[in-house]
Length: 128
Image: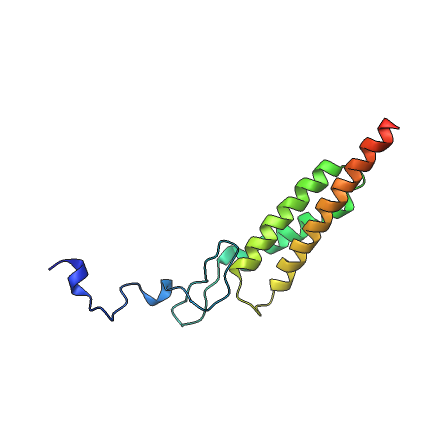
């Protein structure tokens, strides 16, 4: 008997800890969160730890230095965008700390925009 014949057609061969939620909100990659052993959505450990904090700090630093070093502000803004959106996508809705990931994403957008505007203004003022 092969492995395929050992399972009945109604039995799910995938363990409960790794079965995705079909109706759960999707992350940026379009994948639902996984179900933990207790039946609740599981989270990526880094998303609940330092990932969202690093994103928030990078975004704030990007906004603060946008007028002085625009290219660094743009880089920090993109870092905040990526880390913030990834952390937010891996967190369960309603989880404490999801707001910090969302704030990091928004502040990252602001840092990129301010850095780009500052860079354009510096180029225009040097030309004129």
